[in-house]
Image (cartoon, rainbow, N blue to C red; front, top):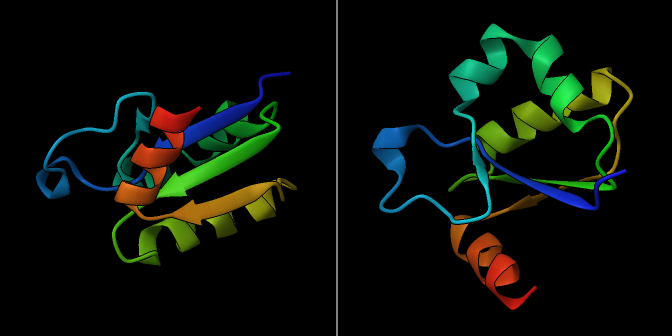
Length: 87
């Protein structure tokens, strides 16, 4: 089982710079293929969803919850970048 997965659900237009170590998966892509999104996350010990306001990451969390995945945190981009860099 993998340890922790960071998923940035912001659109490419919102990103100043992508976060190294995070998977860029815009929310509209998550909506297009919810099953693959859940499959991507199912073995992670923890999923960190990243977005600026928390709105899209909260929607993505709801999708994962419907798949039975509960080990989720929401973070803003700066917080996630710092946590990844400090790891």
